[in-house]
Each structure stands twice: as structure tokens, then as C-alpha cells.
Image (tube, rainbow, N blue to C red):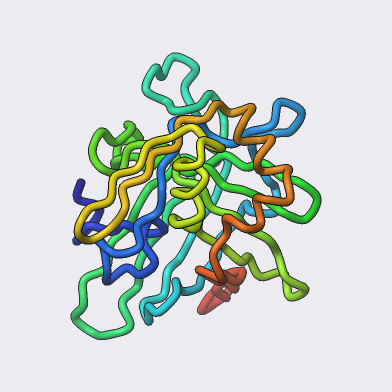
Length: 218
């Protein structure tokens, strides 16, 4: 799926420049709590930052999704629309963008994002990006958003031990993981102490984008 001027895997892999290494698992179901809104107001707005080992700046724009009630292709009846734009650090380099539908769940200071990639028209993708991609997030004392990916080895071990429903297939370059657990089972895992063991080290740090002052006043 072409997104912008180049294929932009965005949060799926540890680096924008390495698409086939350390790819993260997908889930058939999102992590959402029936007692919570799937929209985290703290996320709404514009952010900028970088992913691990990548020099390109990323702009992340998050706003409440405006979903048509008759849109059968919507991955969830409510949520957040997320647009990630890559700004290359080298003149002449290609940029790109990715569009995602996002759902949030919170447990004390911890949060988890379930992201579904969409094409430019808002339709669900039906290729290798299909599925819910899960990411942990927290905020530090500077109000920066810290994003962490899921540890593929830890998830593989849970699946192999029968503690988490799912499938995995090891290939030459990466492990293709698919979590098939129900939403209720995923929420139970998210609320457990074991959830912290599934998160990798700091994966991306995003700060609030400063507003641009007008060049002149009317």
C-alpha cells in the first residue's frame, strides 16, 4: 500500500528505514474497556518527534474521528483519526504519510493504543498491514508522549506456552505474529503486571508541536 511518496510503515517497525526487521505483532481484536471512552483527550492535538534510530522527524496529528454511521468499512464505531507525516532531515529526500484509526484504553498511568491502518480514503487496508497494532504509551513529567512497542519474543513465548491465543511463523527476516485473543482477554492481560514485561524499551518520544505565530496581523 503506497502512502504518500513512499511506503511509510510508521510505527509498525523500529525504524522507518528498516521495514523487514523487528516488525511488531498484529491482533484480531483491539484493547478497549467497556467502562472507558476509546478517546484519550490527552492525545488530541499535534505532536512531533522521532522513532528509535531514525533521524527523520515525524509529525503526528490526532483528532476525534468523524465516522459516518452508515460506513460499514469503519474498523470501530468511534475513535481517533491519526495522521503521521514524515519530514526527512535531508534535502531532496522523500517524505510520506500514514493514516490510522486509533482506540485507547487506560489503566492508571499506563495507556495502550490499538491502531488500524487505513488508505487515503479512510478504507481499511487489506494487505500485510491489516489488523490492530498495539502500542503502550505514557506521559513523562514534561508532558512528552513515550511510545513503546510490543516485544515479539515475549509474545511468541506466551503464544508457544499456550498463555495467549495466537499464531506465529518465523521467517528468515522476522517473526510474523498474530494475536487471536478476545478483547476481554487482552484487557485482562493489559491490567496485569505481566503487561509491563511485554513492552520494549522507549520506542518513540513525541512532544507537543508549538503553534506557528502568524507572520503579520490583520
